[in-house]
Amino acid sequence: MMVHPFRGVPLLWEGRKEMLFTNRDLYKIAIPLMLQSILATTIGMIDSVMVAGIGEAAVSGVALINSLDAVLVNFFAAMVAGGTVIISQYLGKGDMQKSQEAMKQLLYVTLAVSLLITLFGQIFREPMLRLLFGEVEEGVMYYADRYFLFVSLSFPFLGLANACSAAMRAMGNSATPMLISLVDNGCNILLNGVFIYWLDMETAGAAIASLISRVIGAGILLLLMMDRRQDIHIDRPLYYRPEFSIIRGILRIGIPNAIENCMFSFGKLLTQSVVSTLGTASITANSVASNVVNYQYIAGASVGNASVIVIGRCIGAGEKEQAKHYSRKLLFAAYLCVWTVVLITAVLVRPIIGCWQLTPETTELTRDLILFHCVSAALVWPVGFVLPSMFRAASDVKFPMVISITCMWLFRVAFSYILAPESYPVLGMNLPGLGMGVMGVWVAMIIDWAVRVAIYAWRYFSGRWLTVYDKIKE
Image 1 (cartoon, one colour):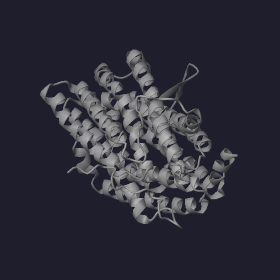
Image 2 (tube, rainbow, N blue to C red):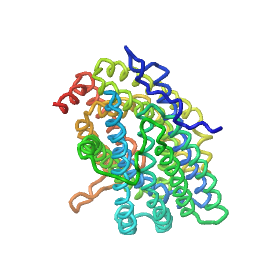
Image 3 (cartoon, helix red, strand yellow):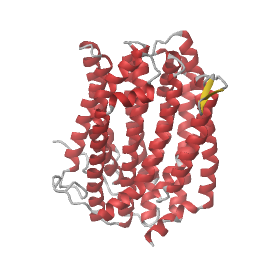
Image 4 (cartoon, rainbow, N blue to C red):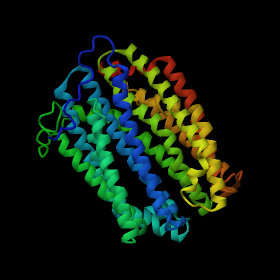
């Protein structure tokens, strides 16, 4: 007899007279999020390793598209985060009907936006890639174009899967999205082997494998969300009537978050453009190092995602003191997770890099980038990227948006152009740069982190992030 994934999942606020969450509740939310993120990052790394058999030009082409893909993926994540906050706040109030309606509105808004983005990507694919990465070698551009052609078709399915997963997590069910992620990522690995090696489709094969796996994941999640036996489900999925009050609530949080994420990702895309002028070795080292250090973010980012649910529930219930209590506990957990992964990465850095079979020059450059990142992430990353998630859960979205965009462009992008190349153009003139190469881009990133950490810490201790929700209600 099959046990439905939803069945037996408790609503985590039921029966709580004092604290809204026990440590066990927090583990039930955060650990599946962590495992799912590990799966997603592992698939990205496996894609890179499997493509590496084609050559460094293929690795570089996929890396360039992944940086563009990240802009769009982060946009979906931001919209979904707005829905997660609204659903969590309604659940904190005990309003099940509004929670269910918010979930349906989130699904349709996400689908509409993702379809528009896919259409744009298909129509303007070639000129967009030439504009962003026009200076790369022709072989790299060839692989990038073939990869993006199919990856862009997967965006609607990615958006739907993210929306369904966010709704489940807001209900306290992080395990089901994790299990579905295991299924579609497993399909991705198998299909990679078929399309890349057996059918010899190169980077297009990796993209088609990602497309099919995302279709499978979105389909399963939608079927589960339509189960009427659940308190919160998709009621009459083919009938949709916009509820503008709920949509405004989602967009009030989602749009600033989306703007922040898109500008942040677009800034990273510009720094990737800087890297693309430094040669194939630098592009490959940057790609491999980025794949490796992504593991250092997973646990901390999962704690940040869990904090959206936890802090949102506390704010909806009017429990500001509990919000502060859980924010301290979750921030400490994020630091502990990052330190653990950083230590493991530093010890195993050489055998990890060996998986890519890089040239000696690229190997040493990759190692330097990873070790530099290990030290930096251990010191400042959690405050810079977990605290803003807590602010958003409390409806404080404009402040982190402004700080994130300002720091990205004023420090990371500007300093990348100053530190990395031998020279950089300004108003038709070529000004001398410091010539640090790809390491200069990573130094600029850490400067950005350090500034935002100082500002976010001030915001947190001032307590102003806890006053925004009350002002919105008024």
